[in-house]
Length: 259
Image 1 (cartoon, rainbow, N blue to C red):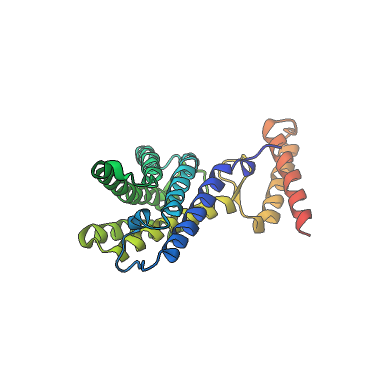
Image 2 (cartoon, rainbow, N blue to C red):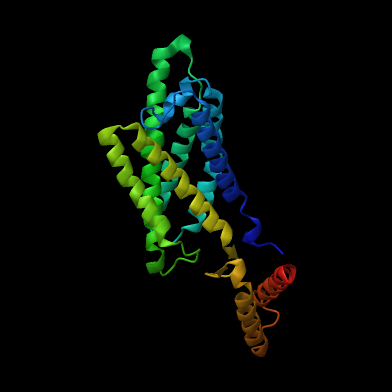
């Protein structure tokens, strides 16, 4: 049986990419002597004794999040198509810039490197805030989108996304290192929560049918009832009946594993 429950590698890329990035970045900060988020910017870790950890952190995070956003775009369809496409375009370009933030400084061409790093770092923060706010808007509009058939995102994820836009504005006004750290951690948090939400829901190739593992018994009951109705209508050989049978078999096996 082929279902989209087996097609979430892109989400795992995003989740583990960000998890690795967070671990490496925090490790670099702790291991750097005299470093404090109150006085030092995130990017200053790229010039210190643990610049390799900083570099790997951003290269991994930026690279592995690209397939994650491509997957997210496929889920958020039939809401606001122009916003969805814009968010995805901004997210992919931003992820490339995030990966480029990880380039280790070249002291031979220091002036050029500072300009380059300043550009990709600015795009990383501003671009991340922009696409997260756009995606959060789509998540917020999910309950009112009649044609939407994807998972119902928790509103707190959208609210966190909106707050990131506000944190960015505060950072651009103050340029305080601690606000930069709050912005960075908030972006990581939003991505991880979104990834966890996408992983936790299972799709069964039926419009609008998303279930958590805890809801498998309820899903099984509904599918069996639907199949019985189709059998009564002499539609037992219809393609949708075959889909129901496959999903019923899948659910029974999953429920048996948990018993």
